[in-house]
Length: 190
Image 1 (tube, rainbow, N blue to C red):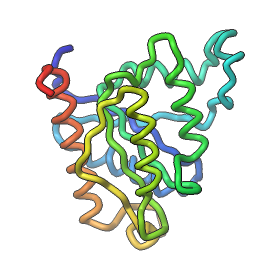
Image 2 (image 1 turned 60 degrees about the horizontal axis):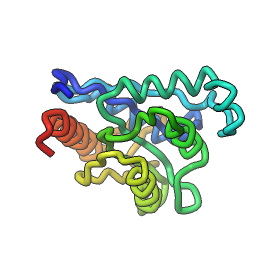
Image 3 (image 1 turned 135 degrees about the vertical axis):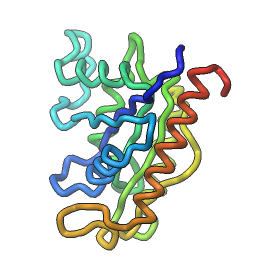
């Protein structure tokens, strides 16, 4: 694996809501990407519910598109709310589709997590569950910094823009860490 001049990060959002704080956080990552990082955002709202009969018959077009995006990315950035102490169904559905054999493209892929929540804990339990899933998928997840955006209504304005400067800076630090980790893995130095 060669070291990429620009680390291509694919953002995957676990919320389909039009005013999603997590989608807004991914847009911040895209706009504020540090030098050596580009961020594209995947669409997962058109994926069918996972059904292995569909996979056996041939990958549905939205699934094939997402699998290709994951395979082409150097790293993955998940941004997700927390539902019932866990990963939202729409995100788990996307992961289930992409992770099916053959050629499971998550394996060995560097990854990071962030999440926004109206509650005080800022998606801590979702992130723990997602990390467990990522271990099984053999993803190479960074540990720091942890980005858990609690009380998100106070950190985003009425237009959905993240206005809380320390949180914006933390997202940049997360991307810098993901970039550096990805390059270390590409060099075989991790």
